Image 1: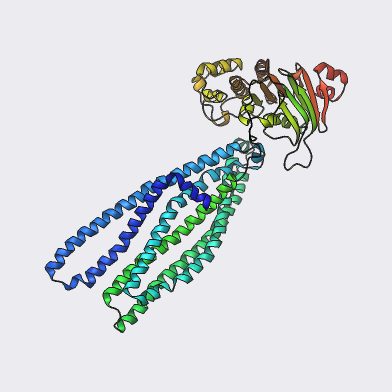
Image 2: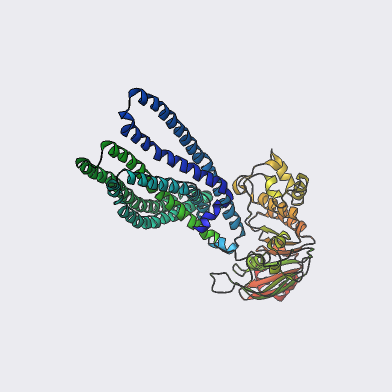
Length: 571
């Protein structure tokens, strides 16, 4: 709760103004029954001329109250909601920025649909609570306490009859609240699961249609939807019990007042005007109780949403800048692996075991081997997508854990097999390699990547919208855009992760030319299944599950007649 209230800090001015107008609105509600009591208990016994004269003043007073109440409600409804929206904005920015810091190991287990749910629907309910919560509580408490004081002054026995019900009602509410909180938390989980399923289905819609498996997806979705409905039923069952129970208790207050009031009138201890005023105040008294009932659902939604928000915010990035980390500058590109071992968090065996490697600046290093040998993992350790379990990796003699992540990754460029292009234009995707670059720089990078010609064949050229994940482009075109992006970045160290394995022969030749042009005078690691693409490598490493089994040039490894020679002839 303390962390939740911390989000009010930048908006305390609006918050206190919101509370002030909430109190004004409560004051208006408490004043009107007193005016009715004055009219029915005092004014009606005066002369007609006096009644008319005073009613004019009362009318002006009531219209003044109405204007105050109207502006108060407008302020609460407008500025109060804007305050809530600003807090939602802050929280969404905070969780998004935090997600950017989390490492690959977090995303290995996370599901995009689940994360989307925490950024969208969860946050909306949190801010509804942060806006309406204090306001509803202040309004309700003021009305309840104010009504109680006035009721006590009218008749203490009637006040006792009204308030004797409250302890039982609050005890009932407390018990049901705990059950509702569990139910609403389950709702959140089920909503997130459905979002995850929808995101998964829509992302893979081409696979679904190619297998004509729409019915399978509908069944999977029905299962998730049924789980969501069951969770909703449980929460609404508890909420129905809560609302029905509190409704009975609030009506019981009125029943008690009527019964006790009738007895008091019979014994001449209460007059009709006071009973009428009392009944009006019972309305003022029970109205905030109903508001609190409605607020309970909002509180459960918002608070469980905030718990899920904090679950993500409390995850510490396992890869972050060390205290006192320095900028990596003047990079030459010498890379050293010193007895490097690595295993994933959930892995029983080490993926890499005591790997030692010295790569001089500007070297063209190729990695080959069977799937699962650790080629991609080894390259992922250089930009610290994962941290080594044992040993150290050094660039120009500096341990990469001693430099800032941003400066480290600024000097490394990656071209992967699975190219990710963002929704938007070709220009936007290439310029991602160097935010704020000029159009001329983008065009130069595209020419270096052999992409300029096909880009200009589109009617809109560099302003062509490529669709979600570049769906409107071929595999070779997407790959050349990703290479142009790295050309623009101009890093000293390059990693090509099977960058041509998914391409046809013609596209492979064009992309391979682009890659070799990019790799010139840069320290380059190439992961390849097609051994024809790495014959020019200065050094080829053959990785197995035991580590580096062989190393040497293409010709040297063929002469050894070992693993590489078998792989080459197999291809």
